[in-house]
Image (cartoon, rainbow, N blue to C red; front, side, top):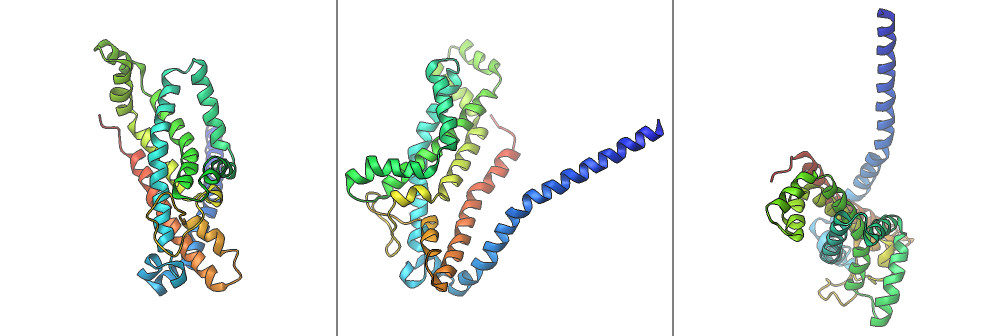
Length: 279
C-alpha cells in the first residue's frame, strides 16, 4: 500500500509540475508583450511628458487620437448595450422559440465574424450615403462588434440564476418584464457587467472596422460625431507603415497608452468576479 501511495504522490507532483509549466508558457507571451511595449513606449512618454498625450500629431502628440478612442468607445457602448441586453434577455426568456434559437445562433456567428467585414458593411450603408467618414459610422461598426459579447454574457448570466427566483417573482404577481428587469437582471448583474467590460475592452482596441468608417483625425480634437475621427489603434496602424524612426517612436508610445486604456477597462473585471453578488 505504501508503494502505491508513493507512486500516486509522484504522479500527482509530475502532473502539477506540467500544469504549472504549461501555464507559465501560456502567460509568458502576455508578459512579454506588456514588457516590450512598456520598454519601447515609456521613453518617448517620459521625454515629451504631458505634451505627448495632449498635443496633435504634427507636434508629436496623440491627444486627438486618445479623445477619438474614448469617443468611439463611449458611443459604441451607448448604441450597443441596450440592443445587446434586450437580445440576451430575449434569448434567455424564449430559448425554445424560433426567434430565440435564431438569436443564439446569430450571436455565436457574430462573435467569430471578421471585423473588417463589419467595417465594409457600415461603409456601404452609412459612409458612402453620407459622403464622409464619421465618428458615428465608426461607433456603429464597433457597436456591432460589442453586441454579441454583451448579449452572450447577459443570456448566460441570466440562465445561471435558479428558476425558483423567477417563479417566486411570478408568485408575487410580477409581470414578465418586472421579473426579467427587476429580479433576474439584478441577480445577474455581475455576469452582465463582465460582458459589458469585455465588450468595451474589445472595441477599444479594434482597428480593422475603423479603416472604412472613422477616417482619422489627428490635428484637431473631435467635437462632432458626424465628422471624421481618429483613434489610437488606427494611428498606430498608420505610423508603423511609415519609414520614419520618429513615427515608430510615436507608435510605441501610442501603443503603451492603448495598453493602459485597455487594462483600465479590463482590470475591473477581476474585482467584479471576486466580489459576491449583493442583492
